[in-house]
Length: 551
Image 1 (tube, helix red, strand yellow):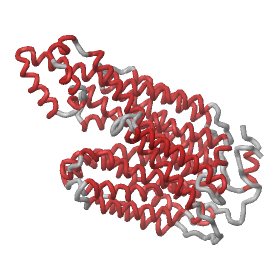
Image 2 (cartoon, helix red, strand yellow):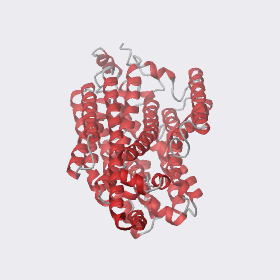
Image 3 (tube, helix red, strand yellow):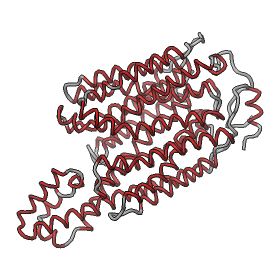
Image 4 (cartoon, helix red, strand yellow):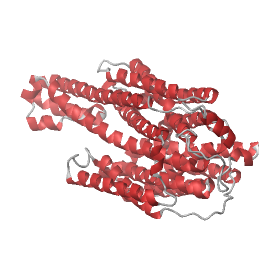
């Protein structure tokens, strides 16, 4: 038996069965519809809320706590992902998928009633607790229904749902906020959520196994105790505190200690949440590293492309959304096409290598842009990047599911999602620091002698803020301030705006260059990915036959 396929020759009595063998075609369609609606619910919420946040801050105040609205959601959802995944393997998908969606909807309703920022942060954490169940269990349910060779088509559809949410979410959020008020950004989740709950609740079967299990409480506690300070450290580093501050170093030290304890606990747990033995499988190890790196590059592109389009090119927020559409369309197209190729060929390694190579080229082209970049140039480079990254959005999930027994499907799916989330958080923090430091350095390098002479050093330091490119009010206020310099004031103002724009372009393209390097590293890692043809059946005999073809 191939070492990367830890399947037994016969299924245990406690092993779950494929839903395809136990449900009618009509119920299977309803199950897929229900989980896709749940996924659309979570994806839309993230994109819609971001658009409404400036209005929320204007009404509730608490600008200093702005980031916590997102951090609380991310913390709660990320730390719960592997726990939900393991529990769904033991007790079935249905209670945790429906329960997670119900918690998410309760959090949505409470968020809409928030009277201050503290309440909103708390209720967003409740939403995150529910969202942590939805994503990994949706992927596991698709795995319950379709064997690996067929999952590519359906996983591609899931990525298309995310792409659709990324396209329509910001526009919808803006329209809802302008016409109904920001509270409806949360209330609008209710009808879609109820529809998803009813559809999935009626179609999904209950859990039929009654074996005794040991819940890994200590593993869950140490995982939360390690993941929370890790995520907080990378969320705060470079913004709330310096990277070398006592707070950040202390959080990272605590995270390392608790995560080390977590893996020690898992070695001796009867039914671990995330077994260290998973990493003995080279397919899992390589996929985790590649997925982590994909998240770093993807979030780098998503976070800083809008800033480049609005700050450097000068497009409005609405127009920048339209300019960003090609990347989302690239995600959708490449994920769907890649899924079809995997379904038809049963192979994935060449697809992964090609995806990383294309993403690397796209990110490198993004890094070569400057202040003269046009919308058309940005759209071309973004489309290439999206086409490359989109392939990997579902590929590694299928690859990992293919490498483990059906009974571990929830655990391995959730573990991969956990490292994907960690990668995104760490990537955003590191790339944000690179952008901020790059802007300050470029600003000093680009500053003309006339500005250095006319403006006192302390005032120049205060002007090192790209916000003047994004806010008409800040621009007008700054221009009025330069009027005090007399006839030369407007020329000095023009020079400053050019310096800020050029410096921002330099800083963001440095981020893209790092992203290209990350994609290159992921490409190299992928060459070490073993390839086992995707199974077309859950039957053990068919599994053994496929294993003999492992390469």
